[in-house]
Image (cartoon, rainbow, N blue to C red; front, side, top):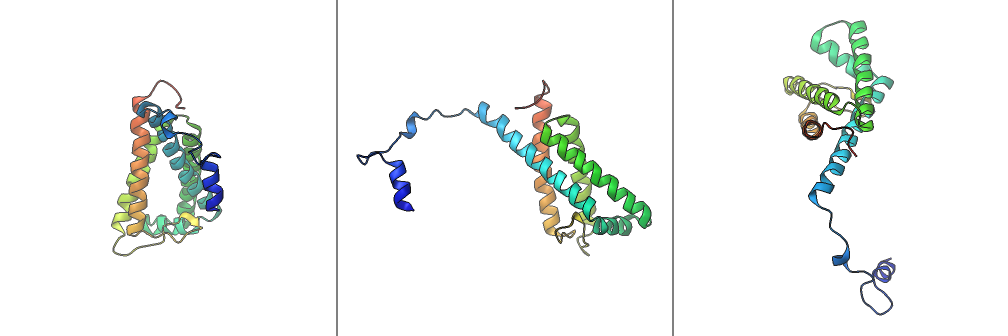
Length: 170
């Protein structure tokens, strides 16, 4: 395998097949918009996956809402379904690059709110149902770290969308 790699990188005379110096360097101005698109798409994908998985198995999220707010199971189940549909819509809109400032702001507020709620449950972690029954997510330190990373990414998307309000991003 290593021999094949060396042969691809060298020409027949043992010299490099190409020179790195001749590859044009991308400027920061060209890289940042595409990096933001990647971050925006990743945040959208997480929201979309969370919403879809929660729609498929809403039991843990319903139980968490019922435990936190004592609303009764029918209301908690309905709120879980509405939350799941909202997450799907937000994820799809972020991935499509539509209404980015509003959706990124709403995503930041959602993540901030769920992080605060998770902080109140650190002493007695509960299953959060963030991704339905696909994962065994609990309201513990990992929950907080995951939400803080997602909040940082969503904040980057929000900050960039506020700077570039002249239309869709690349």
